[in-house]
Image (cartoon, rainbow, N blue to C red):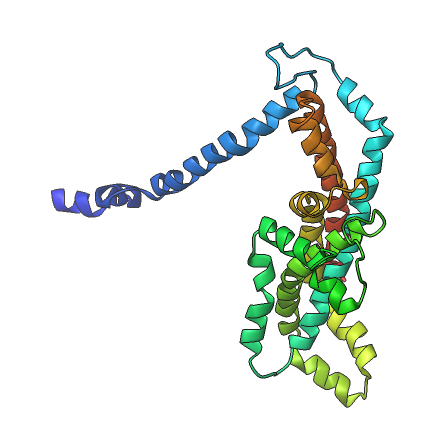
Length: 301
């Protein structure tokens, strides 16, 4: 009778006899992750949100006074801040468009049987594996008017790439394009390799030209994954700080992240800088949401 009782125990009781239950194992992995997110993500986010409604300065011992929406109103009415946003928008458009054009173009060239394809792809991925600081210093030497190789190759003499206010922003964007085009290339290669070969064979039988094949087969099928690459690169370009800070000090290259840095760590306007950070966050979320809606429409086609 005792033996029958032991063999009819429910599964949870038998699992408990063997060791930890599935629920205990799940909690063992989930709870530390949740605590990590709360301590390092959610708490600082809410803490800085509270400071954005105050006149707090981290450089003084004065208490933080609640000022409501004053920081937000002053920032949104400041033409200098809007100029920073204009510079940032120009940088994002040039940088992301260049990365998509170069990355997708290189992916189209690699999407065929060529010698040493794996080695070439690996070498092309090296730029995005480097540190931002290293890339910035490296390209600063390349742009140097005295001994930089770019002016020598292009025959531009002593042209100031980073000293010319009209060109400095585009010089920074070119550096960003060089560094992150491999990321777009990698995702584009994944999308191109997933296109069914029989579609190209059917197009060849129908005597479709390369332009028709590209716009009717290749681009529509790769566009969803290409949009994902654009979303990621737009978010990162909007937050660019390292390259612009290292390469140039021109006012025309002062993107919003540099203005935020100066406000927080040079002018010590902690409360106001927190408000600016949230304005940037809302704008990034707004732009990303537009991309995601367009991506969903592309997938539904």
